[in-house]
Structures are given as structure tokens and as C-alpha cells.
Image (cartoon, rainbow, N blue to C red; front, top):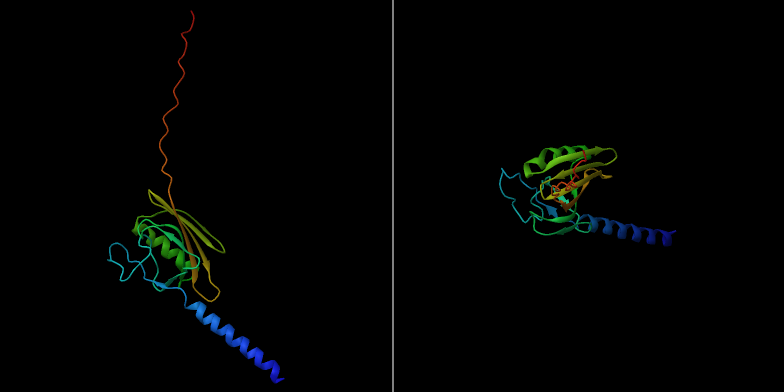
Length: 161
């Protein structure tokens, strides 16, 4: 009996250590103040979107390219807000950063799309098992459409009388 308990306890200790070290691997991202309230207090990899307080950037699943004001890629945030509260937060705060809401689709996850003249931000908000939610932001350049010139009209032949 003792020989079975020892490996079991060893496995539990290893799993607990892995869980604790896995939880502490993502850096906390400073909440992004609105342009009216001032500058962020510490380095911020994203400054053109609002970030709820106590958010953690999932560095393993994020790919952020470019400077903080004009980045492209994917940012994955673990936030301490429910899915509904995170959705309301972004719908209220994104316009103060110059974003216009295009669409919202709510269900088991919430999907939102925002635009600026030069970029598009697509967000997916999913509930987490133990509270809070995961916000995945896909940022891409926006294709600027030019107004096409009207097609030239073929010359009409004079009509015979």
C-alpha cells in the first residue's frame, strides 16, 4: 500500500508545481488610460486600444509586430472581467481611442469588429473556466479603397436619317 501512495503523492506535487508556474508566466499589462486621462505608468506594448486593469498578456499565444500605436498581429489578453462585462468595456472604451464599432455578434463567445481609417480590429471574447475571460484581438491593416473611375462610354455612331 505504501508503495502506491508514494508515486501518487509525487505526481500530485509535480502537477501542482506545474500549475503554479504556468499561472505566473504571463506579464501583467498596465491598463491603458483613455487619451484624456494621461499616459500609462509603465511600458505598454499596446497603446491604441483600451486594456482593463489587472489584465495579463498571454505572450505564448500573442504575436505583436510594430510600434505600440500602429501594431499588427494577435494580442491575447486574460482579463478579470466576465465575458459580458468585457464586451461592454470594449464597446464603451474603443471609441475614445478612435475606433468605430462595425458589428457585434454575441453567443457562447462575443465577436466584435472595430475600424479606423487605416486598420481593422477584430475581437473575440471567451469566458474562462475559473472566472474572467480571454480577449483575442486580431489587428490588421485596412485596405483603402479608391473610388474607381467610371468606365469610358463607347462613342455612339451617328444615326442615319
